[in-house]
Image (cartoon, rainbow, N blue to C red; front, side, top):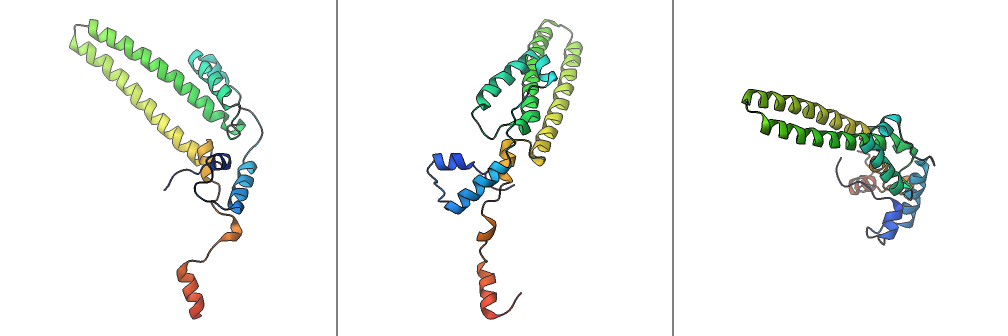
Length: 175
């Protein structure tokens, strides 16, 4: 995907329309953005609620997202997954500290390497799962940024012909 993700119309207007989009383009984008909204709110999943760190992060995000139109019920899975990952990150940090303490107190190098290898495998597998989830979220338009990318940049009726098409039209050939 080339280029930057599109900004919502509200943000474009707040910034003073620096890109000089036409009124028709802004109206079209606003209409398309509204068609993507369901009007539902995000809800906490049981797995998120069970993890104290994930639950705390969910409550923080829900409070922040209250005023943002684009984060709604469609984003529930993404927000809950993020919160659960936050909980796993906290767990891994605790495990790292525990492992470091254990390795410092352990005298046998073989035991140190064994514990390190086990932890490394778990972290590697977890990172693979995270990467797969992020790719899936983008493909299924499960996050606000990917939904904004789905909105066409220009209204349907304003398609301009390329210079080559204009030239061929003048010559009477239809390439």
